[in-house]
Image (spheres, rainbow, N blue to C red):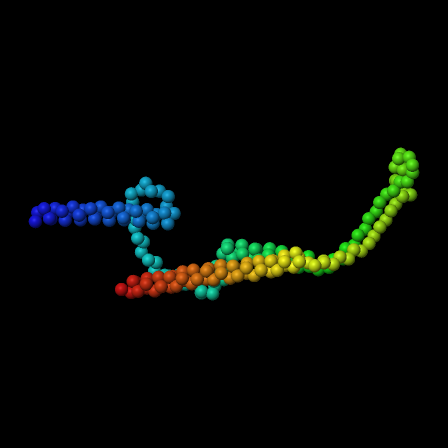
Length: 193
């Protein structure tokens, strides 16, 4: 019996040592979460009493508006959508006819001698003006239509991705909001008992 008691004491002593190690490891993790950088301290962590007045839980709709306005992924996706829409407008523009106004002016100097021709160029005798309108119709437009269809699909894909990002954000927000409400209820129950 003495031998069995000593073995049991050794096993329990080992359990106490492992439990102390676990407490210290979790205290270090808690210090990390709290942003405490000094691990050299051996001070025990103390639990502060709960505040007497609980701050109110924000309205869920206000929390959603705030989260959507501040979410970086959502803002980035809005920028991507805007860029894709611009690409779509450019691709659409490539499928339309174009009308261009052209104008030009040139200086001419005519003579058999290059030196005299050069002098006459700047005397105003040899101006050449031209103006015109150029109307062009895209013919066939296979490449332009393919590009337009591609950009349309890219816009739809970006909008779908935005909806997924917002849906995931709302899911995480709803879970966090429920956790806050449940925590407040648990704290009220703890105070009452």
